[in-house]
Image (tube, rainbow, N blue to C red):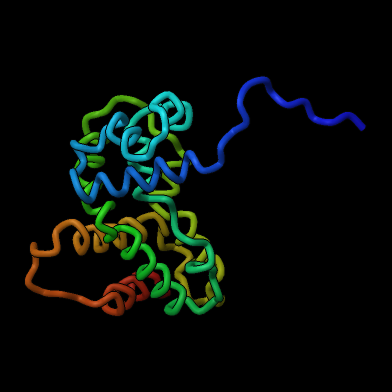
Length: 192
C-alpha cells in the first residue's frame, strides 16, 4: 500500500486557527468590530496575516467563525421531549449569542451582510442560524406533538427574532421574559 504523499512545505500548525480565533474574540471584546482587523489579529495571535488569509478569505469570515462557532451538538441532541429539547436549544442558542465577542460582532456583521453583495457560505449561514438543529428537534418529537401543517422555518424565524431581541436589544423592552416563556410560545405555535 502506498503511503500518502506529503505536500511540500512546512507542516501545518494545528494551533494557528485556534490562536487566531481566540485573538479575534479578545479584540472584539476590547476594541469592538471596527478594531478587529486581520492585522490586529495577526499581531495579537502571533500568526502571520498570510496564514490567517489562507484559512479565512476575509475578516468577516474570521469574525463570524470566532463568534458563532455553532452549537455544541451534545447540548442540543434531541431526546424526543419537545419542550425539554426546545428549552435546551433556546438556552444554548441564547448563550452562544450573548458572549461578549458575539455581542460586539453582531451589529457589524448584520450591517455588513445587509450591504454586501458577496455570496455567503451556506455552511456559515447554517452554523450561525442553527436551523438544522431546530429541525432535528422537531423530527425527534413524539408523534402528534407537532402540527404537520406548520412551517418549521416560520417557527424558527419567530424563535430567532425572540432570541435576537433578547440579545441585541436587551433594553428595548421593559418586559424581561424567561427562556421558559419563549419555549412555551414556540410549543403553542407547533401544537396540532
